[in-house]
Image 1 (cartoon, rainbow, N blue to C red):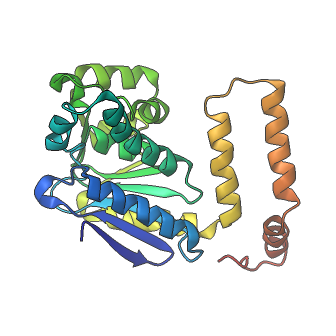
Image 2: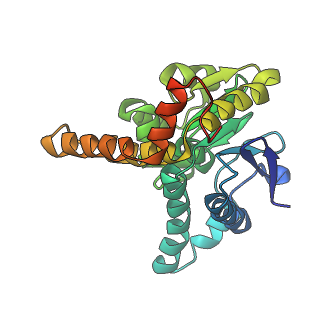
Length: 257
């Protein structure tokens, strides 16, 4: 099974399962990830997704054998191949349910891009990140928008241009990793964050993710102020807000918990 899916409470854990290839991104693995997102999108019992990797690595990035073949493709076909991964990254970034990256080992190239496209990143203190594309004559193209958003333009510039490795503790200091813990505590930390996410109203989570897409790169303007005010007004008028406020006043758990 190239993608091993486990249910843990309200979370679906998606384990990339190509340990012999360090979970390199083959066509089959991309298909499995796309299908898993389709299923999770339609299943209301799934409130959170966790992305992890089996074996010693989280994900080594693109499959180099596949890239060698791509070099012999027509430009049009090569662009279609690349667009598939770009669409997967955007879908993850914009997905209505939160996605947590569980990083226990190397997350290189496209693997680091997968991490950047997630909402939250929990890493073992033994994990490493790197963008070695320029050393292979390649460009970290599709993953670049998410890297810049996740770690800031100045740090993204350094690691995209040098290809040097970034240890998880330093990645946490830069803000790329949200929580860095000893390896033995990794799953406990991920479970704790999933529990917090599952306590939130699912509709409010989806609206907040949509709001983040709008504001993360938008300039401060009257249009942005109007958009954020409209987002609050819409949420405030909804059934979730009524239930959430009522449950707080009545000192009970809301219905989604």
